[in-house]
Image (cartoon, rainbow, N blue to C red):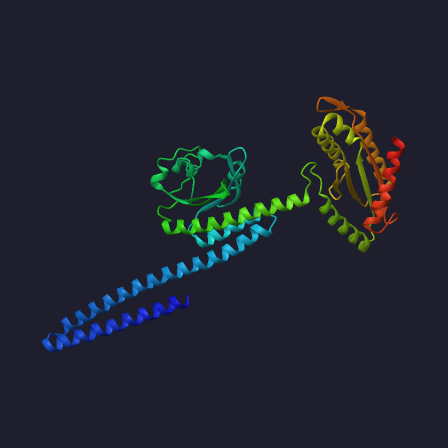
Amino acid sequence: MHGHFLSLGAGLAVVALAQVGIVVATLVALWCRGTDMAFLAAAIAIGLVLGNIGLVLLYRRFRALEESSRRLSLIAEMNVKVNREILLNEDIELIYRTILDYLFSVFNTASTGSVLILGEDGHFTFAASKGFTEEFVANFHLKLEDCFLYQVTGGAIKEAMLINREDFQRVETVLKPGTWEYKSVISAPLFVGDRLFGLLNLDSAVSDTYDTKDVEIVERFRTQIEIGLLARERYTSNIKRYQVDSLTGLLTRRYFEDLFKMSLNRALRYNEFFVVALFDADSLKHVNDTLGHLAGDQMLMLIASALQASCRHSDIIGRLGGDEFVAIYHQTELAVMEKNIASIRAKLRSRPTRLGEAEYRLSFSYGLAKFPEDGTDQASLIAAADKRLYAMKSESK
């Protein structure tokens, strides 16, 4: 911006010198010719008018440079903040609202705008919007083939495009004119890898609101968004692999142990109590040997699902590995959990379940330990629960 002010100052100086030169040259010429004062005044006036026209043109140029500088500054800030939000913020709706807020700051002539997400059913819904009524947003469910960008490109959606009044005259969509009055729209696809993830739209009811330079800005920005979204998806996928057991959907052993440490620290600090439960699926080896490993996997998934039903939102349950599971029930008495788990076990054993080509009665053994009575660290609590689990298994043999 400082350079723009210097440019403007230099321009004004040039115009001022030009005006002085015009006046001086006119005076000299008229003095030499002996022209009367009226002609002299007219010549000077013409020189001043020409000079002022130059000033107006320079001012317009300065305003254009100033607007360009404002946009570039906002875009640089926007790229940093939006990418940071995409990677670090779990509230995806906040991310989309942040994107729209910045775009509306850059393109302050937009009347409406939206981030649309493409669902598995092939329809777009609003992830964020500006300028639309709540009713319109709530009822919006637009088929991919009916969106403006698909119509204009014939389905060959690749990059940001300017859609103008002439384009809208040939667009066929379920959104009939009257429900919208757009004459200038920038529509940009958002891809995650090769998958169309959504659309970014800036709309105006005024013709020629946007030009090709505006499209270039949106195109650069949507590329940044795509990089951030792809990084977020990969990061989330890696986190999920670390946190969630792929077979049962329970927590992985590593992640459960991390949460176990947090539960211990909190309980020690705030004088809380909890119950640790160890579970072991009965006869998994027999099922694997007689019915096959797919049946064994099915058995583990069914038992894991039943055990998960014993957990409240505040409780945690994970798979230790093989046929072993572990859970922590916060602020729960041992007798209460004993009753609840016994009830789940009895219900599971009471009805036959089809595993592969055979029917089988599922069952599990378990052992419970209470913090702090049975131990104040992970090893002692697990050992106490394991001892009771082994006793149950021995009794059932």
